[in-house]
Length: 132
Image (cartoon, rainbow, N blue to C red; front, side):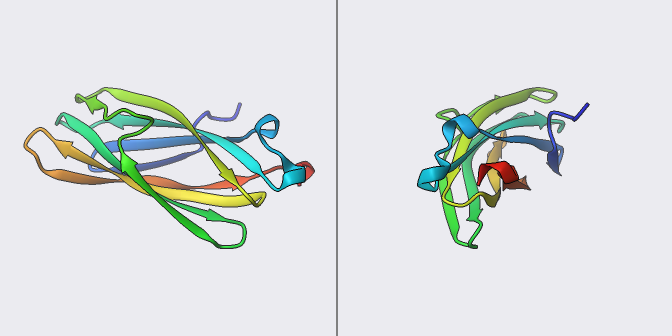
């Protein structure tokens, strides 16, 4: 059985896990549009309460074009994670090529106000050969 989360990165006790799936039903290959959904689980294995404040993504398509996406929180939330807690969310990524990749980081703030940059692991976006 394939593990749900194929990719993971750990920064100062904070683990970011990613599972990614190509969605043929959301893609329009004839129009040059491919779509993936990704599920992120953030686990606070540190000894401190942290709050996710911003996200920073580097999305690369199959031609090597890079799109930087930055914003507040994740899917409209800025979750607070106590030690031992986790937060899950699902989002999506469209591309104009059948292959690409995503990676990035979150900025968290600890209860004492210090910032923590937490890595989001690199993960490939790859449509099956039958999809373009």
